[in-house]
Length: 496
Image 1 (cartoon, one colour):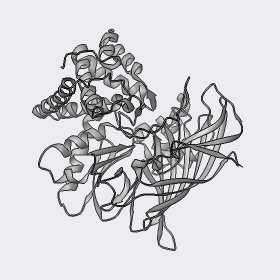
Image 2 (spheres, one colour):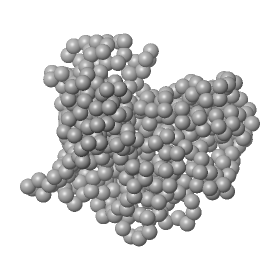
Image 3 (cartoon, rainbow, N blue to C red):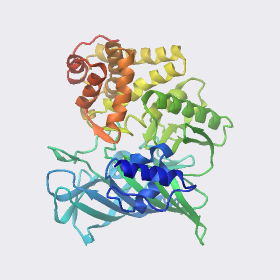
Image 4 (cartoon, one colour):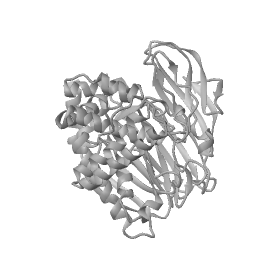
């Protein structure tokens, strides 16, 4: 492995452009992997060697007049379980009513053989029947064709990240996404809960070619690897992701961009053209947040990070790998809400992006720590009054929840947090848990915990006990009682 890593470093650093080949784990040349280096910071290209991740290859055609798209997807996957597969399950998120759109699989093959399928939960899951048993350790290649459509100007009634509005065609979760196989439980075929984030998926590598009209600017997870204009005045752009949890796609028209380089990452802000200062303000916030979190959590490994002003309407921000969406109205406010929201969403590049968790089961793991990252951000940029204001706001929200008898364990799944309890439990109580942990183990151990957590859990999916283990390792102490009172039960804990 050391020899391979040295070869990768030599290949990358001795060429002005990415090398036309790469070294796979077995020592062979792998063109797919060499393309992936485009998405990584130069000092992090060896991250591509960590795991033999599943691979998605897509060819997408965009038709903004619909707005609709069509495409072909190939997923090269490995059965990493000890169980034989006879069915492979994929999420079809746009078929959930909150998306207000549609995603249809029009054909499916496994290892080149056409296969039958069945759907569950209002067509939000599709199961492909394998033509042969896929044994533990075996690979399969799934190919599907699909069509999708998004709503327009629908952010007031549907999920704004899957919508065309205000010059932003945001096309989140537009393709069939491989479901996770959970040891001891099987395929994740739960119905999607509207509360909180929709997508639960594992790390994979994406290589996506998009065909679109030339007057639309394409923004995606990862980085652009190739681009050309066709004879019929359309553009063909190829994007690669590096190891990411999903692939986000948007097409923009009429927005302007401002960019800056931060610690080897290009930070780009896309804003409406009617505000001459919005781009500079938002990119400055994003750059400050990225640098602060690089220092506190560990380096962001990717070459790009993009921020889009979008019509979300029903929520302030939304995170995707390498891209965050910010509600357009925040750019006109004369307060710190824009800054807080950008910082929160950028922290999700660590808490959700690098360190994955089950957002439909234990949402507090990423949302609680992203909320507490708001406080850490203001501390790191030396605005202690705002850090205190963020903390006081979480205290007030959680206190009101307890006063009306709505407290719940942090480990409560979002499906059980009805009656307005989701945000108070997951965001406010979650943030206060991390403040309590910090007070309990001390500043040095808390910093060690954050760094260790990212180092050991990057590109993985973790659960509550994994976080407990990382914290106990950092402080060299036992935290089971604290964890039980906050996470497992709804004990009457002191509000820190």
